[in-house]
Image (cartoon, rainbow, N blue to C red):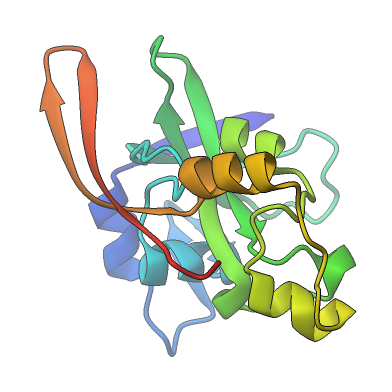
Length: 174
């Protein structure tokens, strides 16, 4: 990976406008893609664990042939290790999800890998629409555990020393 400049979240978000298709940062053209628009619309923190994006890097792959740089948002885990925030499809494409901003959410790399293409977090209504009246039912204990772990919206975060306290609202889709 070739990294260039680092930019604050506030600075990058101030550049993302609905009518813009690209921006110029230090003589490099950056395409404003769905990932950047998702961060602008849905926030710059992981929807599962609440890790905040702290900076963007302008970067590109070493073997990239188009020469264009992109912006990647980074957060840090509980040990201070840098980790990328990703664009996750809420309903995976393999389960009929669409590739648009309404079906995207920011997840850190760790949470995105944990989620994978699992269906256990998909609301019963969506499973029923796709697979009939009973949907793809989950074993009761697993469904309950998944709802507790994954069906949350982070409303507020309070930092105290090195720990994070979350106030969460549980969804009632199931």
